Length: 225
Image (cartoon, rainbow, N blue to C red; front, side, top):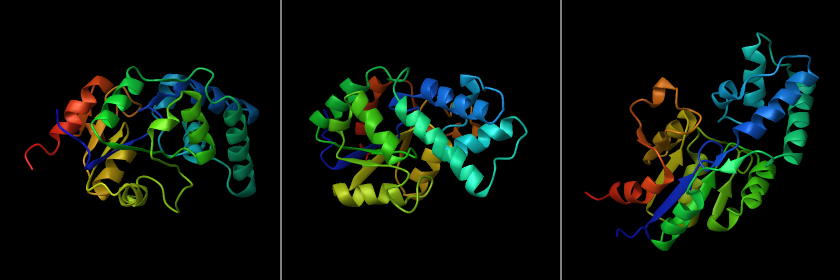
């Protein structure tokens, strides 16, 4: 069994650790209805996730041929969405299968674990706590932790520096994750069950189909080094 004591495994949150699409969809649709727009099916919302709350709303408006309001009006819509979603974060969401068992296995092999998400900290921390996952992670880096978020490499670089592990891998599900990992010069494993599964830009990325595969895949990343 390959030891991972020199490795930090960094996880995206939405669409990677947690299937949050049901609650994200519900919150987005409530925001759209408040603006007199139509609801969007969850299957379409999944493809909009990954760049944060404002981007999700902007894309939701764009799907209906509407321009998201600029200035204070747009800020108010974003704030209303966040406040509403924060109150109902975990009604229908759930961790993907075998998440907890896999985190246990990785920690047992000595890996440091972290989260890097484009969710705001006020949303990321509670949802991890709701599903009893927060205790596994040495760090949780959110959209507002630093001045830049994914696809900037800055959050990933900071995690590597803080955990003091010479090797790092990002586990994600969207092109935003892949681009951030590439910019940070670290490998990235993309979840086939995640929300970027129909993005052609991910066609050449390294993929995995279930969390049970991750320990062996991570252990093999540097086997030839």
